[in-house]
Image (cartoon, rainbow, N blue to C red; front, top):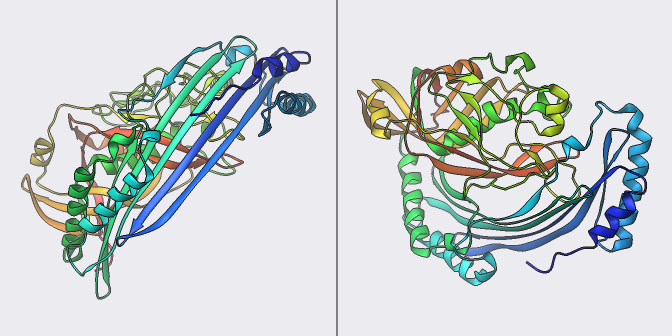
Length: 476
């Protein structure tokens, strides 16, 4: 990363002439994308976003103005705009805030990496992607073989008039492989991805080639598999599908700003009510869910949120009982409910809001084989391919890429087009077993907020067993 020093001290002093508190968040992010399709390079692009968000507290009301002009004069002009608009709207504020919602924070964070992304050439990355695409060439039935990589490098510095000075640096990578097999009117796609805070060490050519071959082989198997059966049966979900189950039916409904109604116009509300905290039996006793931005390689790890709140691991659901929400200090003040350090923005020109970070299902004690061994009649599912959930995050329906029947405690035939549906609390109360080994996944594309913000989140989970779930297949 280049020199990221900006004249923040003079800008903050300028704002303090008219406000009791001021803050400045500088953000610089570079994104590089490369992709290969059927052994030919397809995407080669990069982008840079850099700017600062200037924030003030006026009459108990927080307000913002963003700027890409990082000169001292540019920052001062942004603070003047923030002061003017915040003062003009402060009589209509939803809640009276104070500097308690912007604690002093000092420190730094650097995401773990064995090799800086800057030290990894784009030619090396493209070579790995080409090798993966070529390795998927197992049959003429494989009509699409793609490999892609997205590299993101981010620097976020946060300063405030009450002494905050935090500097955080992130290297993040998403690598995705995809193989589509087709014959006649039937086609099946199998994907694999690895997403997290890594450096150039993730581009291991031999490992990607091996994974690509496995992905393509599974696509061919799915092409000639029978359709998933329909009916109520036991369900084993692998971690890459548990990622979406956690995200949609735990993460979004526990965001305090949704519960307060802030997101109703755009992303929806929540079935969870303020009085449910400490009372609601959200799931079975096997269900323990944590918010943990402190983990090393998950996609949304950090030391401080964008309001200067120190990030710590917190248990949201313990033995199935709802304990804590996904709300930052502002939402905690408004609701009177316990929350977490999740005040996050997607860019320099967006104000922070309540967002998921690393939201994880804590490991249990069973092996995957032991979970499968408890099933008399059921199906194992892996890798989401479609999802639908209502705006209260209650009724849902998910489709997966890969299914495998379970009969009398043994894995059987592969099935295609596996789907399942349920309602959130009823589904989680059917949780009957949790594996002992977690795997971390993530997504870079969680959308929320007006104006829209697309942000990165991480989810780790073991495989899980659910009893008596409604399962159905797609078209034959």
